[in-house]
Image (cartoon, rainbow, N blue to C red):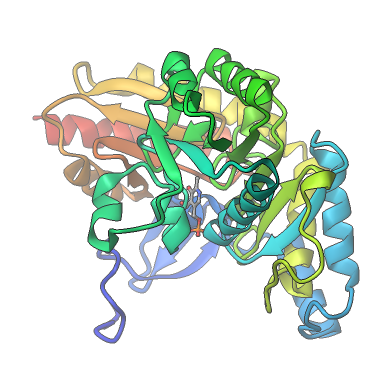
Length: 390
Ligand code: PLP
């Protein structure tokens, strides 16, 4: 393990230093191999060092440096065009940021502008949600323990329980709601999916009140669930959607995609690095690979296989529920099974997974994962559960 005393200890690190990766596999500094199902917490859509992604990044870096957003670049324009064509949002316009939180910050500013026009300022968010660690996105996050050390925060947000359409309607009662912000599948909150019926009720409630529906697709979007937007499984079309993680395949890029009439105008938002040629070229390579290699279908099939294998192999009494869609997989542990101990036991079997919520093992592997790797992962998880349950 490398000595990293100069790094702020914001993360509870696993006792591993990864030095090299290829596809779904990564190696540590002692030569041990791991199946990396953390996958950059969902960012490594094509896995480690995907040859076409690497070639696109190298080529972009060799071709032109950061030009600033005071001039146009070909990769940014092409990527915005691709997103506009992939997503059902009306006359979509894109702003590029550098992370999920930044994409959400931009979305909150769009809501603010819309709210100034409609004289409404409240944004309804869900208990258990996660939208980022910047001040505004933290204020929008429905996890009091993450917010508490930084209170008081912005008071724009009203929280309701997920999947309760009546609670949502009540939250609209004061007549001050500018927007609803939801993750269609709450990843950090424990891989908790909003039901299609609830998402449709959210859309209807927003429409009836003239409020915007903003979906945070940072974790679940860009193919992670087998669709470009996870909300699309419910048939709902949002007014604004945010993306990051899988979009860049490992390079930092965030995007807010909004209905054309909601777009920022000149001077209303900016970013020095946002939409630079290198991350935009990386994202174009990701979208190309997803399309050319049929990865959306692979995501759906491998996700089903993974869930079925865990259900089949996990010792009885260890798993409460297997959740998620596509390759956003959550294994909710039965009472009495410690998630940290379980994740440690999985790791000692050569598989890296993360914890979501308090008791959910989460896997967000590359979209390129194959059946053999799924089999290996499911066996490691089942073996680890047997170990920690005994
Ligand atoms: N929104 C969701 C749904 C997320 O899962 C995350 C990160 O996990 C974020 C926003 C914040 O993204 P970032 O860490 O890139 O700022």
